[in-house]
Structures are given as structure tokens and as C-alpha cells.
Length: 244
Image 1 (cartoon, rainbow, N blue to C red):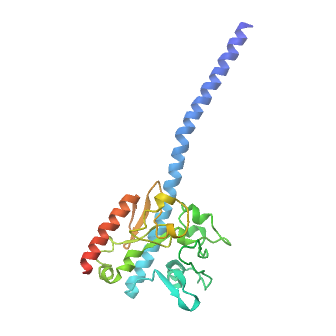
Image 2 (cartoon, rainbow, N blue to C red):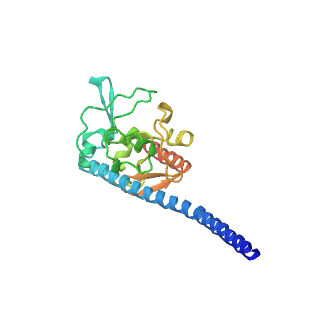
Image 3 (cartoon, one colour):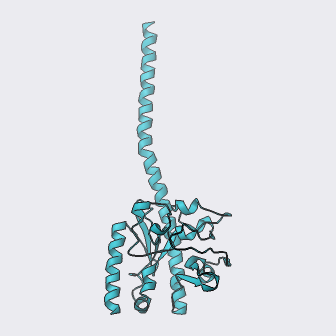
């Protein structure tokens, strides 16, 4: 009888040891799996961004003009059409035209542009964009944004687009269809959330606290909020000094 009790106790102890080992392994493996998944998403994002950036650059080389960052339709109450809704951009990707269904976004309003991209064209880590689909399409403006400073200083930047294409930021992970120096780090306050005016022009640091940032030559770098803010300031100082 005593022997049976000892055997049972030994078996229970072994079971507890096994459970502890499994728990330890899971605590090691699950974070590693999550990191691997995020790495894969970041790689897919870089591939998309490279494709878009090179398409925009080819447009510049062919036309010697930048694809407009947006077009205002004055006949329809100043309706704003962001770059990703323009047929000229969609033609570069062999996508169908969007038509005229884009909505007006008034200053300060939490207005959304009509989703017009399949899931495969959206950053796989852009959780806000991917959770706001409509008819199977997703909003690009919460996935990627163009560098608005290029357009603000276009006359100074355009002559250097070919010789310095690898130094001029083109687009980044973003919560809006554009980003700039002043607003680019607002993601630190709001994360992957769109709250209207306060999140206008912010980059999105959704890849382990970093954003993928593309340049006009197609290469991609990952930057923290501090790194992007610092680089944008240095780059703008150069642009401003040469535009005087």
C-alpha cells in the first residue's frame, strides 16, 4: 500500500515538472513566433512600399513632374482627392479607376476616404486600416503617407530628384495620406488610432516601434520616431539653405 502511494506521488511530481517545462518553453517560443510574424509583416510592407516608391519615381522620370500629393475638386465643395485615389497613381499599379466616390474631409472632422484597395496592397501591420474595410476594400490613407515636405519645397527638391533620390524620403508607414516634420511623431500619443485633426500627418511606428521609410530610389530604412524626426529636420535644413 505504501509503495502504491509513493508511485502515485512520483507520477504527479513528474507531471508537474513536465507542465513547468512546457510553460517555460511556451514563454520562450511564443514571443519568438510573434517576432517572426512581425518580421514577415515588416518585410511584406517594405516590398509594397518599394513598389509604390519606384512607381512614383518612374512617373517623375517620364513626366519630369511629381504625381500630385492631392487634387482639390473646387466644383464639388473643395473635395480632396489624395494621391492614392488619383487614377494616374492607380494606372501605375494597373488598378481600376476610383471614379468620383471619394468624400470630402473637412478640417477637424473624423472623416474617412472611401476604401479602394484590396488587402494585399495594405501594410499587414496597419491594424486600423485593416479593421475599417468596406465591400472588401481597405483605406490606403491609414497605411502609407507621402512626405509632404517634398511638395512644400518642390521647386527646390525637384532639380535634385535624380542625383539625390537616395536621400529624399518618399513615403512612410502612416496614419494619414501624408506626413511631415511637425506631425510625424504623433503616433507616440495615439498609436494605431485615427482621431481626426490630432493625427493628421503622422507617421506610424507599427513595426516594433519603428516605421518603414522609403526613398525615391526605392530603398527602405526603418526608423524610430526620434530618428525620423531628426532626419526630417536635418533634411529640411539642407533644403531650406539651398532654396534661399
